[in-house]
Image 1 (spheres, rainbow, N blue to C red):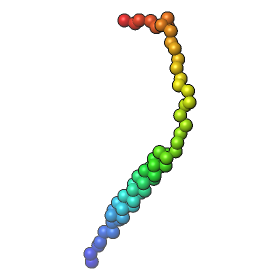
Image 2 (image 1 turned 60 degrees about the horizontal axis):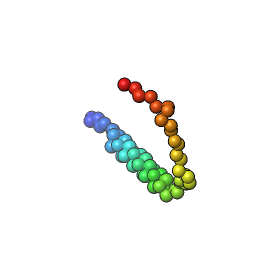
Image 3 (image 1 turned 180 degrees about the horizontal axis):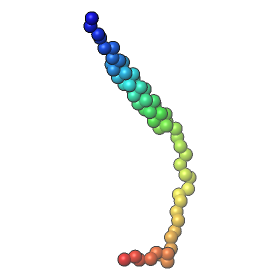
Image 4 (image 1 turned 135 degrees about the vertical axis):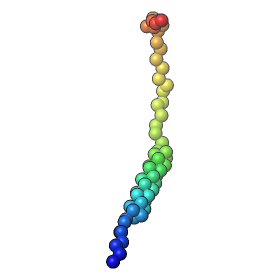
Length: 59
């Protein structure tokens, strides 16, 4: 009588590859959709003037 080993490593590998593929596709679609959104830019330029009195020279 001969015993056979029923290993499911090939099934586990295909499930893992399928899950990884779905995750990659999900991220690619999310990046694509985010690139299509037009985010508003600030209308005025922010400028702050810093006086020279506040600077100290450290050696």
